[in-house]
Structures are given as structure tokens and as C-alpha cells.
Length: 357
Image 1 (cartoon, rainbow, N blue to C red):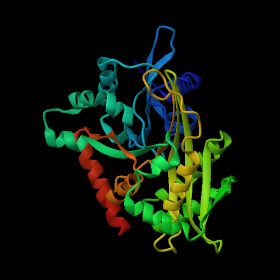
Image 2 (cartoon, rainbow, N blue to C red):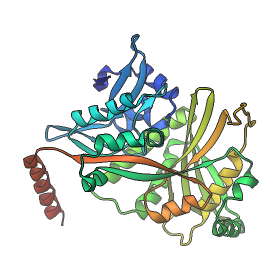
Image 3 (cartoon, rainbow, N blue to C red):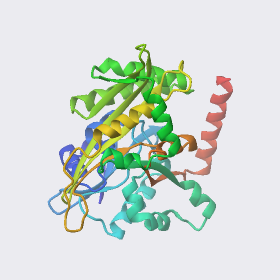
Image 4 (cartoon, rainbow, N blue to C red):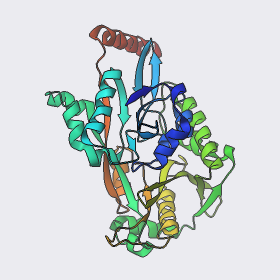
């Protein structure tokens, strides 16, 4: 296992590893990382022929001469990705190497498969006999997945009663979902977001530029679907961007639709257009392929709606109301820089806050 700088990474080998991995998700392909974290690096486990067997993307940033990891925009999950089942020691080696290489990590997200397969290994490596610090350093985040493998009527049975009622009421408003394909079409969606959410420290400009680049490349690769929902007065109520992530691992095909970005028109109160849209999207994408089965009765083709849940309770409750399954993943956050550097960081932060008042 080695630490590779950005220019040392063979991106064809990297993408081949990701596309053949159990953990496969769109955020970690080289072309996606190039947009959300242009100077990204990686830990790579190679075989004797220098094929990439397992990789870990590192969104590296540098400030005041210090290299650190910081979660990039529009990349909910990173972590370790492997073409075969890793041993306990192999996975722990990634975590230990991370600890040794970076003394400052800001909310680095692993993926749900890492959590499912190696929960105890995380705890062994990061639990330094200080329970309070351990809980702060390694946080559990929630996501929600909805399997679309069954037909729509069966999936709808798992909706919460209130969700069914609200969808039925929304259907009376004659909403319409309009698909958009031009690159500038994303601007209105971001404008809704910016008007609805308080943004600080200049992140809005960075986020909009990054979102437009992400949409452009996803569109070029036919992996994006952008919709605007409008009422019978042709008023746009909300917008939704979905990204398609496909994987093939050990004869198991998975298509994952990621609810990547969404926002509502702030001028519309009690907006139910996105709830209505999600129900229509579930109806459209559910059980669209033959349901192949092996002798083990497990499907070899699966379609999933990944809600990419935010951590706010109300948002999580909303996604759970569609009968989705809660999926956990670890987020690593720690600062082990020398105390004098931490002191300097706090001082700089206080000075900036003072002058921004």
C-alpha cells in the first residue's frame, strides 16, 4: 500500500478499480474528483502487476503550509473501495496510514459498505481509550436507501400514512415535471437554494461553480437528470438534480439514483412538489428490468434510490417516510496538530470573526 500524489495516479487504473468495486459510487471516479477536489491524492493497494486492488481518495487541501483533508462539496461518501473483499488487516492498514499521514482531518466521510463490513476495525483504530474523544472523532451519519426492485404498488405500501395522504393531495394540484438538459438550466435550481439557505464565508460562489461543472460532466456522460416541477399556472415550484451511479461487482449489477441536489422556490409556502416528484420518480424507475434470481434467491440486478440524506432530523424523517432503509456511515474529524498551531488557528478564526461583524 502506497501514498500517491495526484500526478502519480493512473486514472484509468483508478476508475477500473472503482467500477469493479463493491463500494462503487459516482463521487470517487477520477473525473468527478477532478471537479470537486482538483488536487486529490490517494492511498492505493497494488498487486504484483501494479493493478489497483483497493483505493482511498484523499481530498487534500493546504493552508499555512499544512496539508489536511476536507470533505469536498457534492461528495457525500468517500472511504475505501476494493475489487475484492479486504482482510481485516488490509482495511486497518488504510486507517492507520491515514492517521499517520494527516494530523488534521475535517469531516472525511467513509461509505456505507465500509461501515457494514468493518465497523469494529474503525473502533479499534480510532478508540484511544478516551470515549469522549472517540465519539467526537468518529461520528455516525445517516443516509437512506430505497430499493426499487419491486413494483410500484408494493413499494408504496411501505410509505407512511401521512406521506400517502400528502401525495394524494398534491396530485390534485396538477403538478408537472419538466426535464431540462442545457448547462445553464442548473442556475435556477441553485438560485432557489441560495435564496432559501443562509450561506457564509463565500461558499456560495464556489458551490455554484462546482455544481455547474458537476452537472456538465454528468450530462456529457448521460448520468444526470434535471427536473423542474411546475403548477398549472406554469409557475416553477422546485428543482431536482439526480445522478446515476452504476456498478458491477461479482455478477451483481446495481443502478443507484442519487438525489444529488434539490431546492424549492422560497416564494411558495407549504410546497409539496418535491414529495410529489419523488413518488412519480419511484413509480417510473421501479422494477424496470427483469427480476433475475440465483439459487440463493438474491437478485443480480438492483435499482436503488439514494436520498443522500442530510443529518437534520426533519429531513431524515422526510426520506424515511417513503419506506427507505437507514444506512449508516462513519465521518472522521480530528485535529492532532501541535497545540501551538491549534492556538494560532483559533486566534486567526477569532480575528476573522471580529472583522466580519
